[in-house]
Image (cartoon, rainbow, N blue to C red; front, side, top):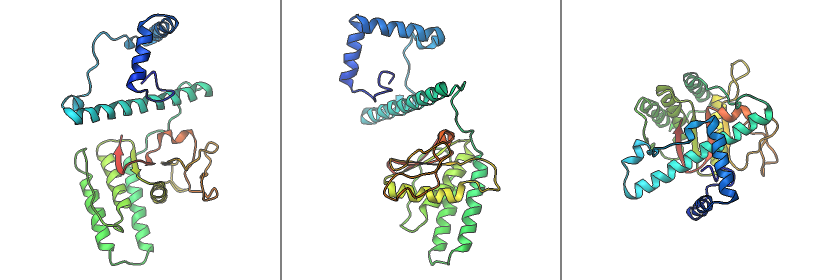
Length: 266
């Protein structure tokens, strides 16, 4: 991970070639040893004599599940390393003593804001024959948030207001278990944009409310404008979608991104 944190995770053959070069001596090996010694003077923990055990959840997996679990652990750890490197580099060139990350928000406050705005929105729209079903889906989703951390599945038809039900569940679940972030990962950019717009309307603070922006829309059609700026890159002619670009969003409480459909917490 350290070897590839600038250019991407290397494959096994690349790792073997690097290790062979380091063990064979020469200028690269000498430079690597010097780098390790320099870092060790600041962080002695990098010189480990014992084997680093995998996390307990990975130790119990076998066969294909163990390989998938190892792949997930490597990629998630790599992602953390890359993010930390970017944030630390930004802080260095900005002359800051530490990375600039937004303070965690109060999930209970966000949950209440979400539910109050949902209720206000429902009062302004015409009644629909499916309103009762949508209401029941939302109530059952929020009730399920009291359960322990794990995998939850929401089965509902198109038009069942799954976006809002999932948001209600996620915020209450995060509040219940002291979690600081909610990540919505959905399969298409168009759906990501739609979901982000819904969550902004239900979560972003109004002029009368305290706090900065809490929703980060993250996909290839988003562009980071000037700090605090708002713009969209793409076919819509730069139409504003209301997601601020800039450093303070590194700590956004709700992140909407393009991936396989899932809701995650941190």
